[in-house]
Image 1: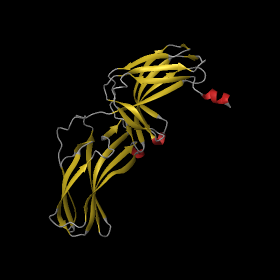
Image 2: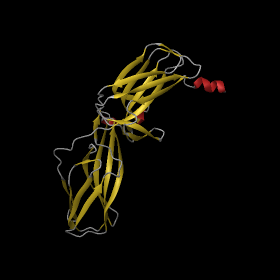
Image 3: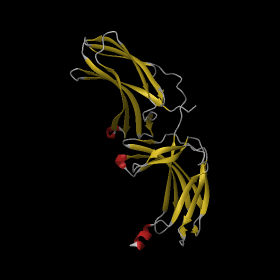
Image 4: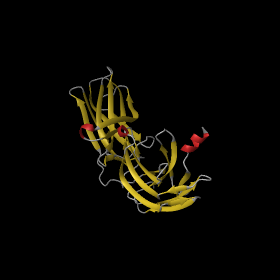
Length: 300
């Protein structure tokens, strides 16, 4: 039995370290198994450099056909799990074919790497960046090691950011007007607005404001849409009267938002909506939805 266990053990240990590991910001990332690990955070156009240490197990010799490291940006659809679509693929050859008897360390560097999309983990899709080390072998299969890292990209504040003004009504029963101070918000922003009741002839029980995320994957007839309610904020409990005005002040920082993603590599999109929900005394629900843009602002 011990012999069998030994047969499946890797012939060496591979350790990937980043050159600025001690100073680079680490952020939490949830893995497929549900565990959360800390990984380094990078931004597009940065250099990604470090060392790869390969150490054969004691008394073992590794015959190989070469050692390489790849930097991959990948999209995986969960209905097609295991099949990765590479939108970024860079490779550095580290060693020519030969034999390894003892620990060997290889430096590597990828300069000003174009990483156009942010790391994203959603309901039906994930986008990830990874370093992949491969020791190619004829027999026993190649030895592969992965190191995840995360990418965030910043956007400048929008030059034009119009407020949102909308009316919603049911003829001769209800007429309300609502206003949000802008249509584009950064991840730690505050939604400020007002709701005006111009006509109220139905008995409203309560009113909520929801933040919804809509993730769409695939295209054409194969498009799959998943909507999540990320936040629910009670604006009012009880019946409003005509002429009443209700202020809105909703902080975004407590919620796990991502930037808006528009048609990432023709694979997926992520959009955000403010959804106003009114409930009357007969439990009928009235909705009004408005799309907003969410972006990542550089920390000052």
